Length: 225
Image (cartoon, rainbow, N blue to C red; front, side, top):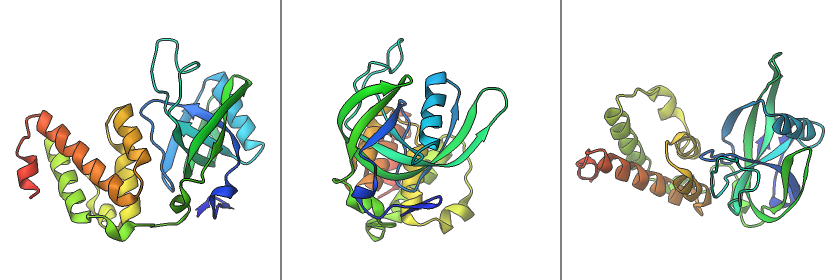
């Protein structure tokens, strides 16, 4: 797969030591785009470090969120590495960056932080399909996914760019909807750790149907039969 000017073909192409950004309810997936507004000094140092090297940052959720932040929180075992493919300085002490997802990774161990940001030894060996564009895309029930999405939009009185949606590949559609979904940490982690694209789509559909039912839109499931 390609992220910006870099090509990643296999799990071994991912560095084994990367800075990690613990951010609750933030989901990055392979080939997904995540814009980030960076303003804390330690995370600005993390971006400086990444830009001076391979431009890779690992997005991972903390397992708990406390008033003290995510400094000491235990991390979920699986995150997703992204490459900085867009970078700008705002002039008021912030960085605006965009990460393009490369591959999921499994944390092997956390090492000493550097300049305040956390670092982990990781491996992508469990996720070889992440390096293959559209892997498993033909197994996705696209019509069921879109029907569920329409019900969600209607229930929340939202609009969507259906021309762009119809043109999107199954992988782009499933991953984009998963990344923008309004669910909590456990649900986002389930979407991240889904073994394949079909399972991720089915998980997203199930979460959305549960959400609609809880809102009182209990006829959602029957409409989708």
